[in-house]
Length: 126
Ligand SMILES: [Zn+2]
Image (cartoon, rainbow, N blue to C red; front, side, top):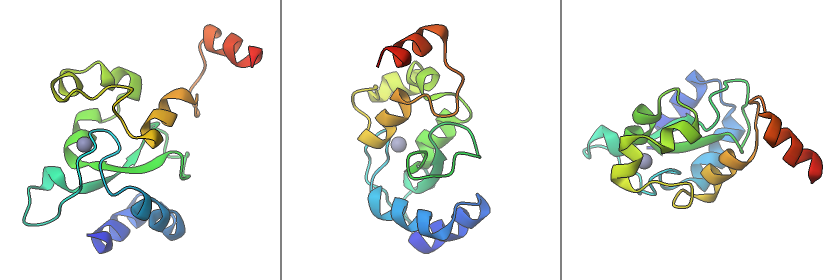
């Protein structure tokens, strides 16, 4: 599995060192917690590269992760917050509390996304 992942990492311009760190960290989907499987299991259970915040410029261990192909195609280009409200997440009971810590931290940090006035005020208070 990891050989194929290293190939797709290159396609997403994810540096080899970072790809290795993420592969050893994420043995299950960061969203639905399913353990990854590989062929001959259905492709939906395979690991796939995920930018937690949809910004290809954010290439570090806090934004690059592995999720199952099923979650990846459901999330698409939606923001994490928006996706959590989807039918897919509701059916699978994927919530901001059920996700793995790496996915949860993607929610809390305003990584690369513009902050709302409330968020800015909160951050200034810290
Ligand atoms: Zn998943």
